[in-house]
Length: 130
Ligand SMILES: Nc1nc2c([nH]c(=O)n2[C@H]2C[C@H](O)[C@@H](COP(=O)(O)OP(=O)(O)OP(=O)(O)O)O2)c(=O)[nH]1
Image 1: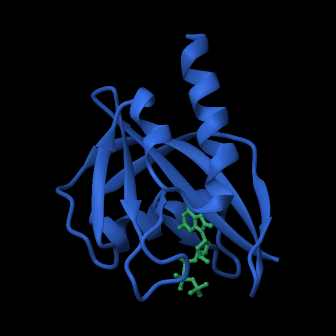
Image 2: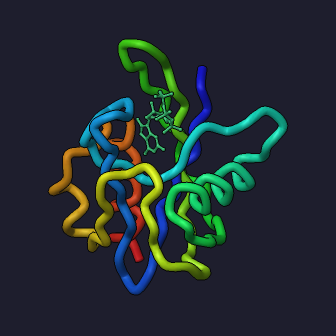
């Protein structure tokens, strides 16, 4: 199983999501940015590295939400989400086609990678409690 970490980056009441490009797996679907954990790397180190590489942003991971195991036709992933705070940087897309800052209420309007759907739902529940 491939372990993938993803960042729910919060800033000014919005959340950052990114659209996968047509050449990537899950083309054109929206996701929380992140990527595969390298051997010997911690989850949070992988997350910080991926967000720097993909978006040129420095983040601070906070809360680990519930991981989701999802089988695509070619592989099974464990997607591990963290809420994160934006520390610094200006977004520069290295791989993605687009990005969007969405409010909690807008999150369900996007076409998500299937593995992300339970994560989006958990995050919305969490935010509506406070
Ligand atoms: N980063 C990220 N990947 C996700 C999410 N949801 C989801 O299903 N994925 C999938 C897409 C990819 O198959 C895999 C992450 O791989 P990756 O983004 O690091 O690398 P990749 O495009 O080269 O993947 P691949 O072609 O080798 O499968 O997890 C998500 O929210 N964030």
